[in-house]
Length: 400
Length: 60
Ligand SMILES: Cc1cc2nc3c(=O)[nH]c(=O)nc-3n(C[C@H](O)[C@H](O)[C@H](O)COP(=O)(O)OP(=O)(O)OC[C@H]3O[C@@H](n4cnc5c(N)ncnc54)[C@H](O)[C@@H]3O)c2cc1C
Ligand code: SF4
Ligand code: SF4
Image 1 (cartoon, rainbow over the protein chains, first blue to last red):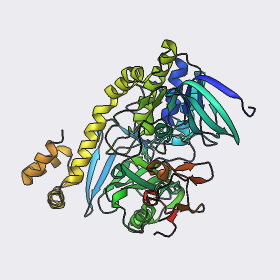
Image 2: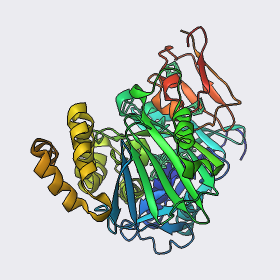
Image 3: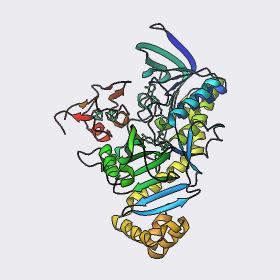
């Protein structure tokens, strides 16, 4: 690559995370000449993820082989409420399917391999530093690649640059995120843990204000132990890492473990965005804010949306249409059909739970403490709440 | 408050501050984090950092 050289593609994807590689895969598969640029020197590493997801979305995005990156299938979840009351949910504990824990660095590389198999090209250590716009249309990016400034032109650019996304802001799609929708996260991958690795563990309340502590098990006595805290609720002079260290110090079963990796990052948990496209530009994955607002999980939604983005990008190239109206009609309409209702619903539930008054929450906990949770399932639990605190049940029901 | 100062020994280059910055004044390079002159010294990046790698000179 000589200085001053201009590259030209049909589709340019910025960011080789799960959403970007999936978009590239389906753009290539549908005939578009596609390039992916990735800032880092290794796809998928360092990991910025708790690595919990489900198996339910793989078929939709045509992924057959998950043996290499699916390391644990859990039996259920143990949820701890303030005051150490525990709720054990076994089996299909959520509506999205069976929970699995994955190796993100392997998944991300596998998704890149699938894209390369369809003909996509990749350039590593290559950062987009600005957008090229002509008559208001995005026509490519200026990039720094292995220390050189290069120009990459494309009919359509897909911004898949994650939470830190700048492509969307450079493109004028949005300005900034409301701080109340941002969760700051810190996690250790720990080894030498002595816990039942068939379960995921969630601790609500005191340890992680406005968020939760998660424990996602991996093979050989390992687990990802992390937490997320709402920006506005972080105490002065304390960091999310401090909160996690306090949590670990307070629990005998975690004190024994040793960290073998540290992960930090931000997650956005707001309502679905009103627009993720502009002339010649589409956003996908975390860059387009499609994380599940309750769990903070974004891999599944990013990949599902990525497939649509790739297919539509190829369609744009075939039809020679890159304008905002066309993207709204084809990309926005399709991904919203698939994901928007669910994101809205989860956002509303999260807001509702946050708004239940302290007093009502304390009463709810008191009720829960009377139920033999080890023996119970969600139905028994809801029945108990209905009996003792009908007003809370009413609040909970109004969320659906 | 002044522009944020990044302690490179602590920074994990996670991008939490970059995504949070309302002025889009931060840029993550592979081994460093840059803050440009668009910074309005609002202090949000300091709040967002999971590990306390950001100091606001003259501020907290
Ligand atoms: C601590 C933590 C725990 C999480 N836990 C879970 C979990 O358990 N389950 C789950 O489903 N989700 C989880 N998430 C969310 C999940 O990690 C994201 O939703 C997911 O990574 C989004 O994928 P993506 O492809 O959109 O972006 P990313 O995976 O963030 O990929 C973006 C890529 O773009 C690159 N990039 C950025 N800027 C540029 C540029 N200018 N030029 C070139 N390349 C660029 C980056 O280097 C990166 O590789 C967690 C997030 C965090 C921070
Ligand atoms: S102080 Fe505010 S404007 Fe300046 S870099 Fe931090 S978040 Fe951005
Ligand atoms: S949030 Fe903190 S650790 Fe993450 S990139 Fe910014 S300064 Fe570094």
